[in-house]
Length: 296
Length: 296
Image 1 (cartoon, each protein chain N blue to C red):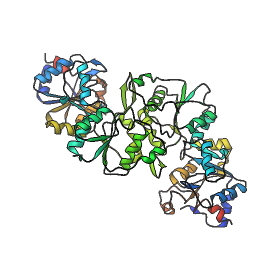
Image 2 (image 1 turned 180 degrees about the vertical axis):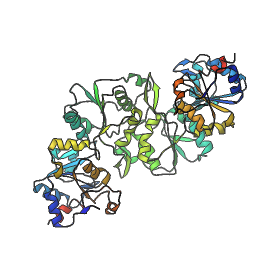
Image 3 (image 1 turned 90 degrees about the horizontal axis):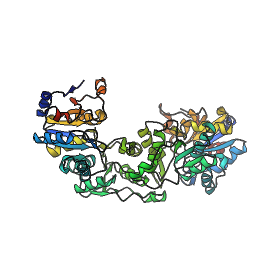
Image 4 (image 1 turned 90 degrees about the vertical axis):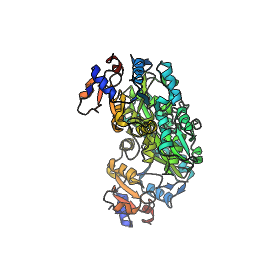
C-alpha cells in the first residue's frame, strides 16, 4: 500500500524532494468543465515555492496553443511552455530525438492541432486537412509508394477514412525505413457525456495490416518522458508525475523512472490501492489541493 | 504429407466419394482476370457427373447477383444459386439461424452488395449508403443508443468513417443483446496490382473499443459452413472444399468437417505441404482441371 500524504510534515517533506511536477489534467485539475476545489491556489502555492509545473496530456487533437484556451476558460493560470500534449511530444520527438530530415514529409492522420505542432517544429506535413474525401476503388490506383514520406503519424482524427488508411498503409508497407508513430493509445475518449472509440482503437487497422507496432508517444509509454526530460533538462529523481489513473499516469511515471503521486479526484478509488496487483504510486493524496490545504 | 491425385484411378475414386464441391474462386478458377487453363471443361465434366458445385467466396462487397457478372465476363458458367458469398452468408445466418426479428434493423458498415443480400432476405438495413458523410464532435451528441438495432454487421467498406464507427460502437456498447457479425476477417485484399487493408483490419477499432469479438462468417470460420449445409441439405462426409490456401480454404473445410482438396494454382506451393506444421488437406492436385485432364 502506498503512503498517503495526510499531515503538514509529510507534505513539506514531499515538496522538498521535488523540483518539477508533471500534472495530468482531467481528474486532477478539472472534471469535465468543473475546476476541482482549491486547484488555482495550489498551483500558485507550488509555483511560489520556485517549482516548475508542466501539464501533461494525451489529448492529440489540440496544439498547446489550443489547449491553453481550455486553461484560460477555466481561469487556471498556465502558458504554452507549461503544456506538453501528445501532438507536441510527437513533433518534438521527430525533430529533436529522431532528427527528422528537412527534405522528408510526415503523412499525418489527425487533427489540425497535430499539423500545427509539426509545422511549428519546421516539419513538412501532408494528409491532415487534405484527405478528408472518401475514395473509390478506382481511386486506390492513384495511391503509390512515396519515399519522400519519412514518417506516418497517427492521432485522434474524426475525419478518419479509407483514403487515409490506404495512403498510410502504402507508405509504411513499401518503405520499412518510414517511421510509424502514434500520438497515444487511448482506446476510448469521454465525449458528450459518454464514450467513443479513440486514437488507440483507430490505430489497429494499420498495426494489423502491417503487422507492425508504432512508437507510441502518450502516457503510459516512455518516449514522451524522454522528450520532457530532454527539453527541460530535468533531474528525474526530483520530478514527480501527478495523476488520477494508475494504468496511465502512474505507470507513465514509473516507466519513466520518476516519483509518482496519485490523487483521488478522478478515476481511481482509494480501495483499489489495497490490491496486490495494483500499480503502486510512491504517494497518494485525496486531491492535488491537499498539498495546499494540509500546509495552511 | 497429403495424397496427390495423379492417376486416372485416383481421380475416379475421389470423384465417386463426393457429391458436392465447394470451390474457392481466385486462385482456383481464375487468377485476377485470367481464367485458369481447363476450368470451363472441368466444371462441365463435374456437373455432367451429376455433382453439385457451389462457389464460396469471402468477397463481401458484391451480392451473388453482382458476383455472377464476374463469372459471365470470364465465360465461366454459373448461376446465383451456385454462388455463396460472405454477405449472402451473413443475411442467411441472420434470417435462418438467428431468426432475426422482423421489427429489428441491421446497422450495416459495408457495400451495396451487403445491403442487397440483407434486403433480399427481408431484413431492414440502415447505415449502408446513408452514413458516408464525415461527422463533427458536435455531431456525436446526436448518436444515441437504439434498441431497434438488433445487429451490427461489418464488411469491407471503402466509405468507412468515424460516423459509422461511432454509431456501430454506440449500438453495441449500450445493448449487449445486439448481435455483432463480421462478413469476414481477411486482413489484406489484392486491389490494383498491390494490397490494401481489408474488412478484417477495419473490424479492430470496434473489437478493441468494445472488448468483444464478432461472429465471423467468412472462411476459415465455421458459421458459413453451417449456412451452406443447412441451405443445401448437404451430407458433410460427401462434400469437399476445394481451395488454394491452407489457412483459409483448407482450414475452413477441416473446421466444417468436410473433405478437402488443395490445388496448386494459387497461393500455396507444393513444398509447403511437407512442413510438419502445415494444415493438411485430404488430397491435393496440380489444378482443379487435373480432375478433367487425368480422366481423359
